[in-house]
Image 1: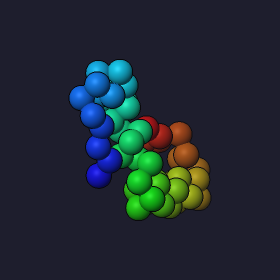
Image 2 (image 1 turned 45 degrees about the vertical axis):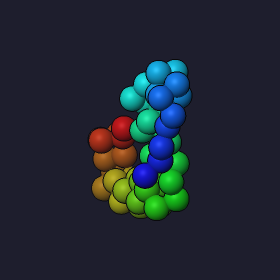
Image 3 (image 1 turned 90 degrees about the horizontal axis):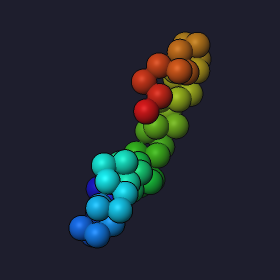
Image 4 (image 1 turned 90 degrees about the vertical axis):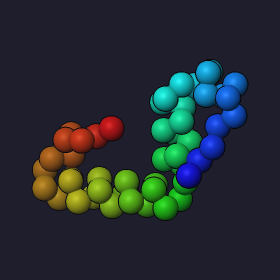
Amino acid sequence: MGTLRPEDERKYGVYGRLSVVSNSPKIKLKKHQDKVHMASNNKSDVNDG
């Protein structure tokens, strides 16, 4: 998982932490697959972060 130094966490907060985590390739791939799956179900706006 992505890591933030304490000063970065103060600066970016929870969203910064999430963006660091979601920038890891494995999760990015999973998110992409979820988007493709949702788009094929015409629900691309559901659970969109």
